[in-house]
Structures are given as structure tokens and as C-alpha cells.
Length: 305
Image (tube, rainbow, N blue to C red; front, side, top):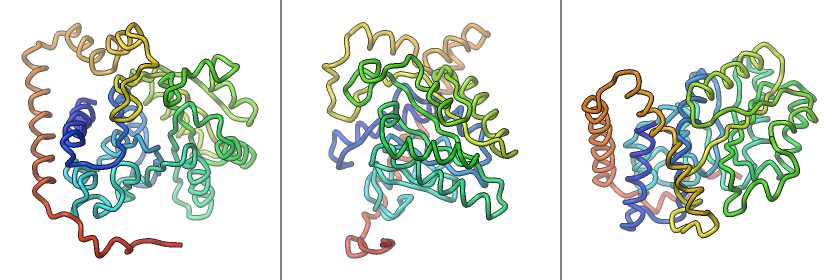
């Protein structure tokens, strides 16, 4: 979780320095979701389809930091040769099959992957992640309905950070738990603490086990909070000071450090671990900055229509 946090903080620095260009969406505060979920998958065969807020998913899947920084920086050594940037990066070798900037569009793609698993004998389970705002998209409804009807091995994971971009979630839905919608599609739905990697891992592991044995999909709503704006530059006028303070007090890394201290780990040891990860991230960033910029004459390569 700390590796993801420090990566995102370095991305912010690079974006403000105009080393990274374009729109960037950080995931600070939601790290437990990615660590917990990917820890329950077999990434040698399972497939992850995240949203445009996907840096944490990529790191959770094991994508090297150097390659991630290089991709965001438009370098040849990036995961996609500098072509994907922040919102479209992918790394199939690590089970991370690509972000998507169309809200909710990953759901039908993940369902397609789940259909393919019926024929290739891989036992693959697909996991698609999206925000709670995407739950109101028609493509997500259609994907869940089809997956439920065909009992496909796919997990729909909703990162509910209580804001659909800049709109308070509870103002746009008529039920308390989005996970309750699963009943209408004929499969299981549950809501879990998204700031606990153990809670997320347990829920995803159980859903993966059922999906592999032919019991069909699941909808997992993970309750979390982002501690940054929806995108870099969002000053969050729509959030109260009290709401932001609550999010900071219960964010997953602060909670984890508190639990480590309660279980006897010294602050000195915690600081040592934090320093090691900070050095790792800074070193990866420096290597990416020193790598060659992608050749723009190759920009039309690897395009398919």
C-alpha cells in the first residue's frame, strides 16, 4: 500500500512539473482495495480490467515501477511504449488487461474474457473494477445481466469512495447498498470495508473460488475514500473539511501503521520500511526520466480496427 501511495505522490510531483502531461487520476486512500483484491487472484491466468484510476491496480498486479513511470512519461521503456499514458496503460504479462476511460466500459470487456474462459480451459476468472457512478451506466447493467444469466466467472468490484466524480453518491441512488443490486441479476452481492486489505482479500478470494467452480459472478462493493481530488487540479469544493478529515483519519495506511504500533512494531522500524520504499520509488522515477522519449514516428503502430 505504501508503494502505491509513494508512487502516486511522485506522479503528482511529475505532473505539476509538466514532466507528465495530460489528465491524471490518483488513487491515494484506496490502496487497500488493490492490494487486497490482487492478493486473492492467480495473476498467471486471471485477468484484471481497471478504470482510468488504475496505477494502484497495475502495482498490485506486479507491474515494475520503472515501466509504469516510463509509460506515464511517454518513454520507450513504458509498459506500452509510451502510447497509453496514465489512462490507457496495460500489462497483460502481469494479468492487467488495460484501463478504460469510458465509464463502465470495462464491464462488458471483462464479460467477454469470462466467456472466452469457458472455451480455452484456463479456469480464468475476470475481475473488473469501476466506481459507484458507473453502476448507473447501461453497459454495466447489460454486462451484469448477461453474466448472471450465463453464470460466467467474472467479479464486478465497485470502488465506492462515496463520490461519483464531484457528486455525492447517496444523492443519485435510491438504495443504501449498491451491492444489493446483485439480487436482481441472480448472483451474490456483498459490501466490505475497502480500507482493510484483509477484508477485501477475503471477499475476492471467496468470489474467485465460487466462480472457478461454475457458480457464477459476484458483485463486491468496497467502501473506501479517496484523500485527493477526482483528478489532479480538482480542489474539491464539493467536500466538507470534516469529510476530508474523516477520510484522512481512517485511510488504509494510517490505519495499518496504527495496527502495527498496537502489535508491538516500533516507530523506528516503521520509518525504516517507509524510507526503503521511498528510495525505491524515487530511484524508479529517476531511471524512467533518464530513458529515451518514445519515437513519435511509430505512433500509429499497434493500432487495430
